[in-house]
Image (tube, rainbow, N blue to C red):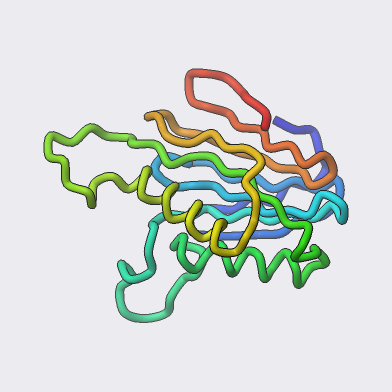
Length: 165
């Protein structure tokens, strides 16, 4: 995807922030959603790998805010702003949210991918952050990489190639 010198890799339920010519990448996006929030003027961007739609699904103990859409988006915004992004300049791109398996029941709880996408979009709307591009749904896995230097999100889709948004 990229020949950049420094690539920050984030795993499931993790987040990170990069600047300038650095890049940030996550893989293994099936039903999970990779969300990028960035300030293109200041060349700073953050990424979170959201696993579930709602923190009410959390078990007892320490809450991992990056794991849930309802807590991860606000937390990522705070990280990007803390690292120099301007709140008024923030934009978003996202990918993932596949329905990886077919279920015979129409149980809403089994629609994790679509529910993750809906929850992410709801939080972005609540925070008044415009979504400038997305590649969501379907039934394929994805790997994404973002560079704040050019604000491009490279999306590698299993058995389909690469698209750039």
